[in-house]
Length: 102
View 1: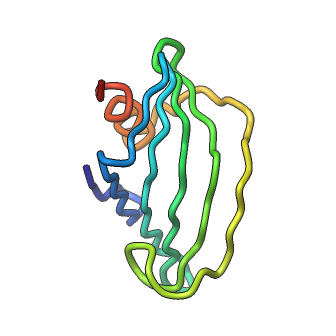
View 2: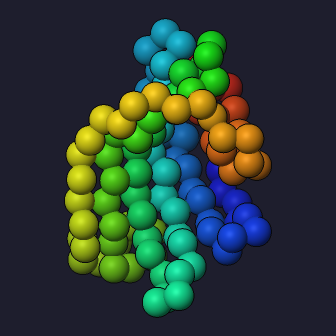
């Protein structure tokens, strides 16, 4: 799955990274963010709740090159609090994609 949105961000998902445990799904995303300084290339893992539409960040790394290549500029493993799935197109699309996989 991939797509651009109105913010100039491209999000890529590798279906091979999807791991389901009951109604919870973990999935890795690769995002290319266009910023004032250039681009930020972010690889993150999120966990999604499929019965209750929620998500949380588990890990995030920022890379110097597209597609998670090059030098690691920042690396953080953390388990954020659960949040409601955002109503924007990207947030809904990622949740639906993750939860549609069996």
